[in-house]
Length: 112
Length: 419
Image (cartoon, rainbow over all chains, first blue to last red; front, top):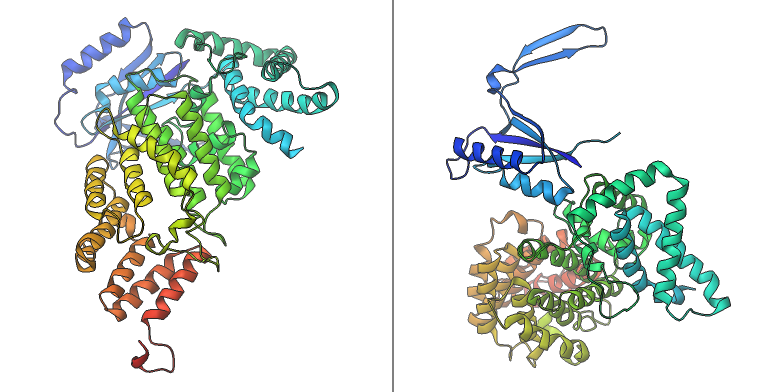
C-alpha cells in the first residue's frame, strides 16, 4: 500500500542532531535501498511559490506566495510502498524531517 | 434471550479478533460474527449446543464470509491483496493455549483499537464495541452521547483502520513499551467514564466500570508478564471496591475520609492486593502500579486517621516523577494536608492555581473548600464550594456540595452566631 510522507519543515528549526544534510542523504539512500521508494522530491524555498486560483467565470488569479504564516511549511515528500500504517509510521519517524521541530504527516494514497 | 447473548459476549470478542486477523477487515469480521451468533441463537436451542461451540461459531462465520466474498468479487480481490500483504507483514499468531478451538487473537485487536493513529476519545469506544461486544447504542450510553454521535465516531475509526490500513498485530518486544500505555490508557478511560460519570443523575455506572475490569482481566490473561497490566487491574479493583460506601443513603457523594469502610468490597480488595505487589516487584514501578499502591494503602487502613499518609505522599512524589499531571499534584496536596495539616495542604493547592487543566475541574475548588473549612476560614470556604458547585455536573456531587456549603455559610435571616 502506498503512503505519502509530507515533510512539514519547521519555519524556525531548532538546531539538533539528526537533520543535517548528511542525515537526509543517508535517509534517502536507505529508503531507496529498502525497495519501498515510489517517488519523492524536496521543494524549493517557499519564497519561490506562486498561488493560482480560477473562479466560476474562468478568470485566473495569480498571487505571489503563500508565505509562511504557519509554524510549519511543506518542504518535500516521499511516496513509499509498504505493507501497513505501522511500517509507514516507522519510516516517517526515521525521516530527518520529523526532528528539530518539524513533523511528517502520513497520508495513504487513495486507491480507485 | 439476553442471557444467551451475554454468554456469547466473551466469545464474540474472540471470534471477531480471529476473523479480523484472518480477513484483515473489521467490518466483514463484525458482520459475519453477528450472523454466526444469530445462527447459533436459532439452531442451538433446537439442536442442542454443539460439542465445540467456539469452533461451530468460527466455521459458520467463515462460511458466511466466503459467501459474502463470492457475491462481491471486487471486494474479494481487494481483500485478497490486503491479506497477502498483511501475511507478508505479520506471520500468523501462535495457537492459544486455553481454548483448543481457535487461537485467541484478541491481543492484536486491543492494539488495533488503541492504536495511536486513532483519536484518543475513540479508542475506548472501539474497545467496548469490538472486545467487550457492546452494541453501538450500549457504547453510546457508556459515554453518555447520542447513538448517532457514537455511531459516527465508530464508523470513522473503523474507516481509518481499513483505509489507512492500521494492522492487526501485536507490537514486538521493542515497540511494546511505547504501545502498551495506549491500551492501558484506553481501558482506564472506560473505567473512569463509568466510575465518575461526568454528568447525569447517578454518580457512577457500575456496568461501565465493571466492563473495564472485565477487559483488564482479559488483557492480563493475554499479557501475564506485564506488571503495568497487573497495576491497572489492581487500581480498578481497589477503587471499585469502595463503590457502595461512596454513595450515602440519599444518593449523595461520600468522601473517602467519611466512608463506612465495612461496606468496602473485601473480595475485590483481596484480589487487588497481590496484584499491587506484583506490579511493584521486579523493576521500577509504572504509573498504574504506583496509583494502585496508593489505593492499597487506603484499603489496608482502618480509617482516615490510621492511614499511612507519609507513605502516600511519597508515592505521589514517585507518581509525579513518572508522569507529571496537575490531577496527581492535587492528590498529593490532599495527602499532604492529612500528613502535615490543612495549612500545608492549602499552600500546595494554591501553588496549582494557574494550572489550566484544573480550571474547570471541580475537585480542585472542592479540595480547597474542604481545607479552608477545616482552617475555620468559612467565608473563603463558601466561595470555593460555590465555585465547585458551578462546575460539578452530577446530582450526588451537587447534593454533597450544597450540604457542605450550608455548613459554612450563614443561613438566610439568621445572624452569624449560627456558624
